[in-house]
Image 1 (cartoon, rainbow, N blue to C red):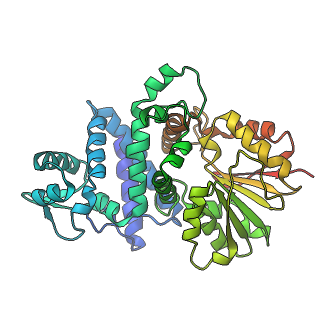
Image 2 (image 1 turned 45 degrees about the vertical axis):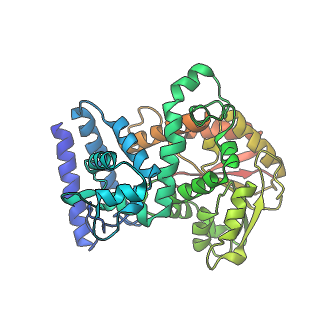
Image 3 (image 1 turned 90 degrees about the vertical axis):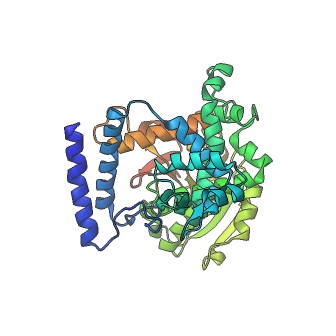
Length: 411
């Protein structure tokens, strides 16, 4: 415990000193604190220290915690999300419990008890008796639509799926079918994939797109878009055509377009997603973006592209489905064209070159993919084996930076 405490103290001193030296704000629970993060993307050393602090505090917390309260946390957050309590408190000033319960349509006693529990997690605070005000965490949910989308997705689709995962494994032992999951069981759509479920309720597909945009945005520390733009020499491709496969609203392609002005983009996704993307084209980049409805389990219709870009697509599917995606793509690629992807690369078990944070986040994402789609995150060796098989040995491997991997089609 003392070693962990020393790490926390030493790295915290470094980080606070650096933040003050660069005139950057210190982290705070105040409602006007910087969100969703207090460290800019272009400060990798500071972000590294922050990750070390996170890892050490997480381990120290787990050592001394005793009884866990995660299930209570989920009940509290689900209630606040379902009743939209975020919006019932002004960003400046306070609201009474009576006012909040009336606006939310929630019994006042339950509202008070749930919010007072939330306050132990720094979600809202009570600056004076019976008056509720925002903290940085709760204020972010008011300010950031993407944060609300991500929270709603986690608290509904993923939460219901996690609660049903054991039942799903007992009902479908050994299954890797993407429709036989905790998610499909928990949401009452046995046999349907999460994406088929989104097709049944388009507003959920729209929310999922917003959630993915939030995860890729600056400051979330989960593969921000800027890292994708920096992780490969996009400018060296010249006047190239990039097909963003399963690209949602094209938010990652926008980041790439900003660093590589000669690239043009075709955003492909399912019809309901593409219609949303077309309605909100990126400012100043409209002439470089086109949109096309396409299911990547069917033959790729664009055969003259220079790059087929996949961001967090293959991790949504078990190996058999990934091979099907490649079988519908690789034969339609021209020689010299590339598959470039941004995916989590799991550190191998026992890999001491990876931090505790990298192991923890990677394995957390792997569990999320198990629950949602019977899919998985993969190690570098896993990725290479998958693409050798799926590419029928017609692809040569390139390594980008961090989470970027690429394959070039041989002539």
